[in-house]
Length: 402
Image (cartoon, rainbow, N blue to C red):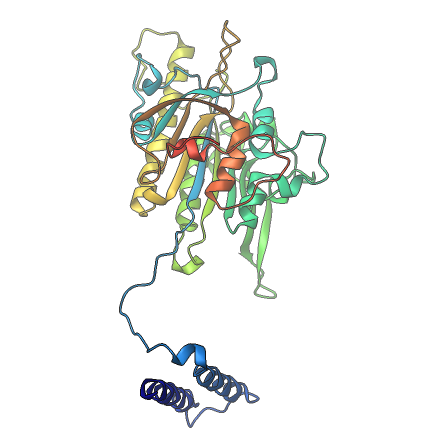
């Protein structure tokens, strides 16, 4: 009985303390009684705690830190173009080295049975993007917005961005990137312009990036942004370099922190190299002195450049302290045509330190369709019920698939 009475007294005293502590300062006036009402409500809640269910237990104070709430990982998908299964030294390339991609694989999982497509004749960047992003066939567009990986992650609280070539629809179509879940876009909506590695513009969709001098409100920029170094046919800015720089800036500007309430991001960097061999390259270095055909030197130089982009991205993540909470996927939208058309395997490397094992070579069989449910599970988002593909997250973590 004494314990019960003591508990009641303590709670009443705490209530009175809050009552007087929350009173407004002498120079302040409560706005329409709001402070008084909130103070009285707090006191009422405090006194109500003296009910039988509460006062039967003694008050316990602890300095122990509350249990940490797990933060969702950000997701980066880097997509090359025309990169073959054996083009990287970690996949058996012996003519030159790709040290940054090798390091990415050594710290993560390198897949040997990732299928880049269903058949070579239908293997295009557009078909890859449809299989990667959508859960419905191209003709079924009635509910497409809610069934893209970008929209699923955006609905789950992610900030989303696409950088590079976009092959699924122009600015006025229902498949423009910002209409199916991407918050930001920088790249090309026209395939011909995307094939020009010295284009004199870049298409951008950037919400709240321009200050309206009239109403002082931030407005959306949507349209072409000129690239002065490439105007008049000049070749001052190599577009794949610029796309990579845009990706690095996206990561820096959207890093999860206290200012954005640790909002995770989803970024796709669709890099158009090495391509089909027709793309331009600033230099064939460091292979200029090799006794190879010029086309082979150019292709090797682009692959080395691509490897350098991965090195820049890894360095940026490390500099920002994001290494352990970002899942990085690296693959290619298409593979080079071979005489053996039955082999459609492409490179696939997944890097996620602290969550998936390092230095693993996996023969697990999967393809682009499985990326959507995998990304959805990483982001705690529920994929559509009618989806036919499956998340490979259990396989990434070394668990058995259900």
